[in-house]
Length: 148
Image (cartoon, rainbow, N blue to C red):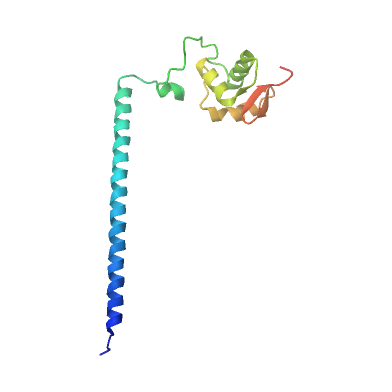
C-alpha cells in the first residue's frame, strides 16, 4: 500500500470543493439564462398568436406584393398608373415624375404605391443597371441618364 500524506489529501479535497462550487455557479447561470430564454420565447409566441389572429380577420391575396401581403396599405388614394408595366418602365416613370434622383428604396416604394409589380427592393439594382435609361449616382441612388 502506498502512503498518502495528509497535505495531499487536503489538496485533493480542496480541489474537489472548488470544482463543485464552480459547477454550482455554472448551473445557476445556465438556469437563469434558461428562464430568460423561456420568457423571450413566450413573448415571441404571443406576438405570433396576435399576428395570426389579426391576419385571420382579413383575406390576403397570395399574389399580392410583399408589402400588401403583410397587410400594409400601399395605395393612399393614388391612381395605379404603373399596374401592368414592365419593371424598368415603371422605374423610369417614377424617376421622370420625381424630376430628381432617388434611392432604390424610394423608387421601390413609389412604384409599388402606383401598382407596379416588383418582387423586392433588392430586385431593383439589377433591373436599373441593365437599362441605359438609368445612371447609378452612387450608394443606391439612381437617376435618369442625361439623354432622357
